[in-house]
Image (cartoon, rainbow, N blue to C red; front, side, top):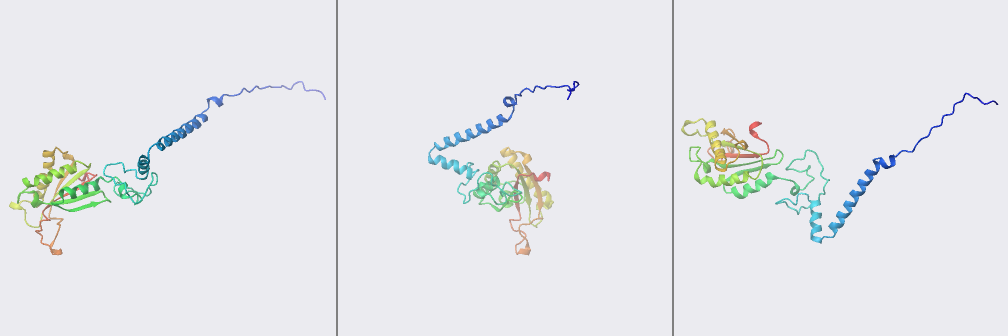
Length: 257
């Protein structure tokens, strides 16, 4: 058979690439190796400590907030990091009840304890609502003001001083509401105006005496709209608890809601 002289033979020379030395895969492997070595040496370093230190480290990973001041590290439940479950977690209630109470950051709970300790002799109606994150308590107006006026009594200064110290330890706003009973306001004043003047007098004491930020406070006059007691329950409308100043501490500012 005769050869076809029109056939063209092409020879390609393929040179080897240098991806092996300049690729990125080895960097990932090296990073994993370094991370593993760091973890190994960290474990070896911790193992060199005495038993008490090991217990403290172990306690931290079981109770992540136990290093914070006034936190209880004796919870009956151990919840490791990364095991906090549940939706709608709040600062007060934890992860759907999955986290023991002592593991939850609760500034208002701590505030409640301080109110009980420092104002227990005059305050009443102390209530912590974890769902909406508010703390409420009241002090009778008779303990704060000169009878029939919005002038703060000198005897009330220590109570307000303690309150200012407590409020200074927590962030958030303070709603100050003046309340009255069903009796007419003194000198024929409008009850809403009179109750508002009392709320403002308390706010002014915090602002002027203790140099607190005025924007933190929201004074309101409620008059007798939300009586603490009423005749239907067998309690006279002139119950002194109706003549009160109610304080509501909240992370939200009630004045702009």
